[in-house]
Length: 302
Image (cartoon, rainbow, N blue to C red; front, top):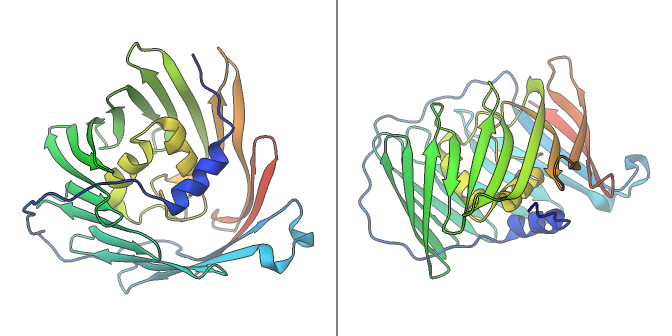
């Protein structure tokens, strides 16, 4: 049975302000091997601005929201500022370009890695959730607690170390990718192999300006988004389309479709881009649920 949801936008707002989690267990972490190294980009995004409404020319300035991105001398993202809501994200790295700590005005996240650069511990919201990760080949076992509830998640990685399958205690998800490593399909099944949710994602062939940052945090972000189901995870990806919330697609996501009947899909996200001379996104408009919700975006680069 396919479950249809109209709450995806609301869930996105919840994702942006709340993070479920648990208590930290004692664990020894290995030292990393090298210092941080420079990241090389053709362009680095400096600012993004979004305006809500139906016509940006008629939208008042109090509906304009600007995000500034700040990088260190190695081009690693270290700070994001959000105006006019006066919110700040701070990023701290250990070595090997591993993101060790993320601090927001309202919450935090901590990641720990072994000497191979593999994520072995993740924690958020001052210990409200904490997970330990162990590896056996391309399989990852995630164990911990989330708000005091025991959690066990099994993950299978493909040859590119992208999540191919994620199994929970009551369901599992299968993920497909294109040749560029972009997620193109997510399907949830119950334990009787009946489909619960199915999503298809489409991309352009141009560079995503957020791709290349926060590589070490891929698995922790994926677990956070998809630990409950693909509905929650895909909504997070929708919400993060204009920022570094999930910067792991090489190209720009322009459409998401959700299966609602046997072979019938509904477009839940539609994006129209304009590009600069280097084919990077310059402006774009997002529409959800047939244009019920619209946002207009502009990117500025260094």
